[in-house]
Image 1 (cartoon, rainbow, N blue to C red):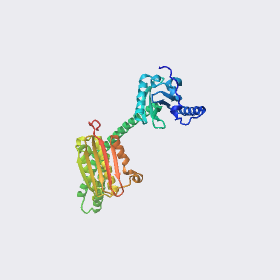
Image 2 (cartoon, rainbow, N blue to C red):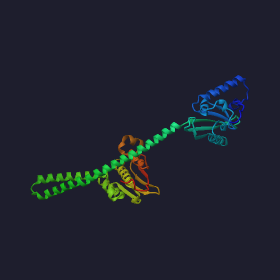
Image 3 (cartoon, rainbow, N blue to C red):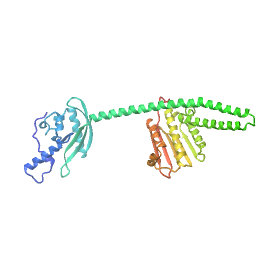
Image 4 (cartoon, rainbow, N blue to C red):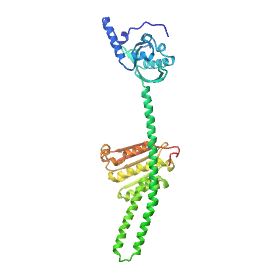
Length: 381
């Protein structure tokens, strides 16, 4: 600690005394200034250009653990431990040399011995000639806030992991149901269809009523088989797992045309190696494409749809663009929540990707899905 320095006159830094006032008025001004400082809940101070404290509030005095008389007129080197003092003097100098306000995040030990984090705002103080004559600052203890922020981030990470795990379980269950539909129910329906064919050829030709009944049962069977294939495809298509993304997408394109969109021209540009996809990414691309094409078929009244799947060094992209009627996105979210936009956004986010939808009435719709590549297929199911 250096020797006692005579306490400077605060009024010289607080205002330019061009019209000298009676001492009582100056004393009142100083009291008012100190009252303002003491009503600031954070640490607040005023220094001259040499780094000597001219004024501090009660919170700052409490943080220092020194009396005000041992702070005023001294520098940070006299008040704080050497490491903290050096940090404060560096930031003071940055404010003085730059002539502008700065926001700092600082670490220091509290009086109780625990490390704390402070957010500090420092700014230059200028006289009426715009000459910098000192610095002022306010410092807030944000340790608790930082701890809460860290805890929330950890909770968000845990929630994300849980959502991913739930999605994985859900997809696995869909795969199981899809296979049961395809392997068991499909075989039974096929056997029923063959049995009806046999009955039709085995009955006498004059049994017109029975033949008509068999024909209706055959139609019901055919319709059920078509619905079963559609449900299996929506749950988790075996074709995606067995034959890959390109074939699965082409299958959906053909199915879409068969379901009544015969006038729709769907073009596919597939410029990526299938090995770039693990099962998770492959499934998300398929689901987003399937949802997008369903929306086009039901709502867009489009003539042409361009589907592009390509890769860059780091990312995989899916683009679905149509020339349909387009939409007001805000209005569509309210009127047609079933468009599945939120679901597509969530699927992209869970894989660390991004989903973007652009559309205007009369200008078609442009959908983009970007997902970062994975270095291994460890996440594949």
